[in-house]
Length: 170
Ligand code: APR
Image 1: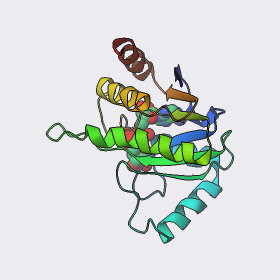
Image 2 (image 1 turned 30 degrees about the vertical axis):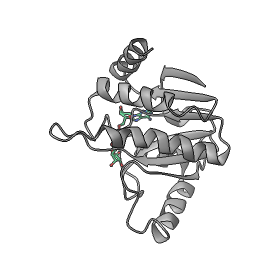
Image 3 (image 1 turned 180 degrees about the vertical axis):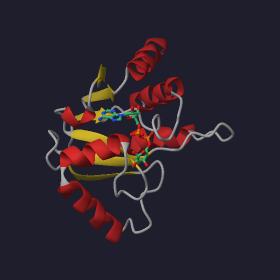
Image 4 (image 1 turned 90 degrees about the vertical axis):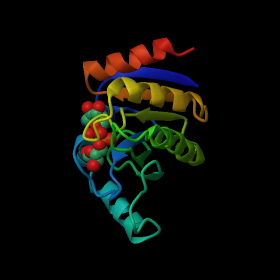
């Protein structure tokens, strides 16, 4: 499994799966979520609404992942996952790990070979970049179920955090 770390906009990535840093409502938001729905078009939200009307009536739990169409995005699917909000008193790293494991599991079940991840939880959810990068890279390495994982970072700080985390890992 190849792991790439690039700076860019996840909504332009030509991969099988683009992972969305969603919230449990699945009804959109800001950041990556807003960009994906804006660029992907209404088909994505329509499928999210169907999920909410069905087995995800109470929303998508933190750490879980679910796939929808990618709409107008250059991907085949969007896998929505809900990252944990950063807490300085509670260790929620297992939930951030689960986001990556479950997103890759859902992608592999669909037959996806390439997956693009944003830096989940590091925006509105305030997870420190260095810690998130270490957790994300370790989690992906534990789940070699696709050919390519591409971390798509939106800032130089995030790019540096992921690049340095990778250089520290075996
Ligand atoms: N491409 C790649 N990365 C992006 C993009 C983009 N187009 N837009 C933002 N990012 C980066 C941010 O810079 C941050 O590093 O994605 C990372 C995750 O930030 P958020 O999108 O804020 O996601 P998160 O911190 O997980 O918070 C999720 O924010 O947008 C709402 O609905 C969402 O409630 C949920 C919460």
